[in-house]
Image 1 (cartoon, one colour):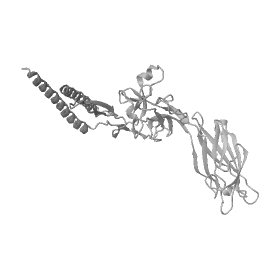
Image 2 (tube, one colour; image 1 turned 90 degrees about the vertical axis):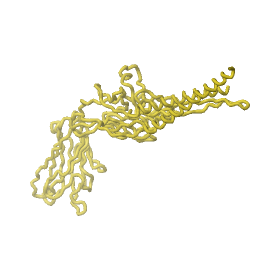
Image 3 (cartoon, helix red, strand yellow; image 1 turned 90 degrees about the horizontal axis):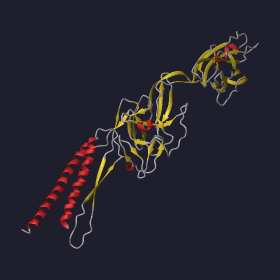
Image 4 (cartoon, one colour; image 1 turned 180 degrees about the vertical axis):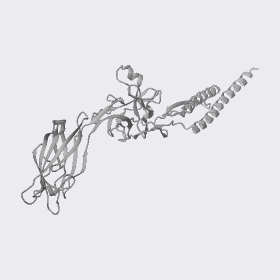
Length: 433
C-alpha cells in the first residue's frame, strides 16, 4: 500500500509539472502578443489519512488561473485608434462575424487593448476580427443617458470618413467703437455700417448688415445711436432695431447706459445680449453689459470694429478621428471643428480573474467574475483610455525561464521517484527466487 502510494504520488507529480510546463510554454509563446494575460500554475497537496504507523502519499494536483487583472507595459504607436487601458477596466468589443450574421443581440466581449482601424464599412475593427463598441452621440455631440448594467445600448463604433458637416451660427459678439463726434451738434450724421458673416442651417454663408445711425441734436451731444440689423437671408429685412444711449460721465464715459428695443428681441442687461430671428432661427448677439467696455463703446472720433467673434462653421470634410482619455471619440474636420460621435465606456467587474478567457485576448463575464458595470473612463474605480498605445504581454520571459528550470528539475525528481519505486518492486519480486 505504501509503495503503491509512492508510485501514484510520483505519477501525480509528473502530471502536475507537465501542466505547469504547459502554462509556461503558453506564456513564453505569447511573450510578444499584445494584451496577453499570463497563466499561473499552483500546486496543492493531497493528504490521505494514515492509519497506525504506516503513511500513504497523497500526491499533488495542479490548478491554473489566468491573471487578467495583471497588466503589461504600454508602448506608443503611430495609429490614433490604437487603444489601451491605463489602470482598471476593459474595453467593450464584439466579434465582427457575429455582428455580420445579424442573429440578434451581439455578445459583448472585453479586451484590454486593440489596434482598431476602419474597415470597408467604416467600423473600427482589429485584424483579428474584433469591433469596438460604444454609445452613439447626438448630432450636437452630447451623449444620451444609457443603462450602465447592460450592454444593450452599445453599438459598433462606425466612422463615416466621407462625412460632411457644418455648424450653424447661433451666437456672435460685437466689439465695436462708435465715434462720439458723430452725435454732437453740427455732425454729418454719417451712417456707420458693419457686415458680419454667419452660417445658416445648411452651411451656406450669409451676412448680418448692422447699421449705426447717429442722432444729431440741435445743440450739445445726444450720445445716442439707432442700431438696425438686416439679414441677407431674408432679403435684407430688418430683424432688429434698437436705440443705444452711451454714458458721458467721467467714471463710465463711452459705455452703454441704456438699450431700448424698437423691434426684435429685448435686451438682457444681465447677459448683455439681444436675440434676433434670422431666417434659420434665433441668434444671440452680445453687445456688452451696461457700464462696461466689453462690447459696444462710443469714444473718440473713429469707427473701429475691434473684436467680432461668432460660432458656427462652413461645411467641411472629416480628416481624422481620435479617442481622448475619457473614451470620447472625436471626429476632426478640415474647417477646424471637432465633433463627438461616440463614447467608449470602460467595463469593470468585482473579480476580473473570474472571467472566461476567449480567443484574441478577449474575455467573457461569468458568474465567478460578478456583474459588470459600464463606467465613464476615469470615473469610479476605472482608469483612463490611452490612444496611440498598445499594452504589451504580461509575460516576464526571464521569470518564465527560471520557472521552467524549476519545473524541469521537479519533473526529473518525480520521474526518479517512479524509477526508485520500480526498483523496490523488482527487489520484492526477487524475494521469491
